[in-house]
Image 1 (cartoon, helix red, strand yellow):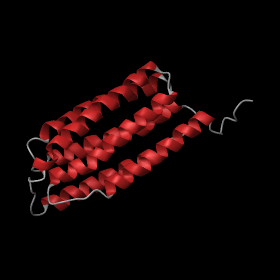
Image 2 (cartoon, helix red, strand yellow; image 1 turned 120 degrees about the vertical axis):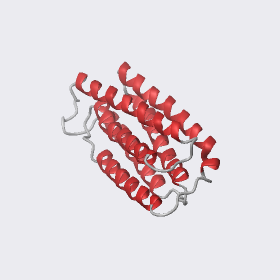
Image 3 (cartoon, one colour; image 1 turned 60 degrees about the vertical axis):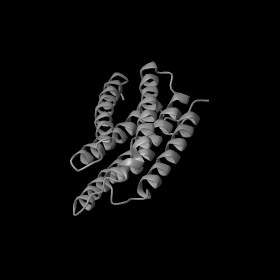
Length: 190
């Protein structure tokens, strides 16, 4: 029996159910993270669940994809973002002492909230089809773009010196990942 073209396959349905669960958890953890008067610490507590979700989403797609290029992209996301989480956890305590005063903190947080809401909406409304490879990239590109914008925003403010190279690495690696996924989306005629 073949699937109706408008109905999700069992694999696509299982993939998307897990994706939605991970996305909901990420949104909850990012929006309820305990914020302080340290922009650096706030970035860390909101980016860790963001990275954790990317790792889980990549693990999810690896269950279903046989595309070697996408397997490489997903594996790279897992490796890079696991390392980034470890790096942020290692500096979290010392960065908590970098305090931001005046209007900087509310201005930063307002911009970050806008970036997050846009990212959440784009990920939730990404096209859902039976082509899991394409769907993953259409979901992950706005996720990566959100991380880039969050890091670039943080770099415009006074931040903990130990955090700066991590932010720069996020911008570089995730821009590279976006370019790889956009190229693969075209190659797969998504």
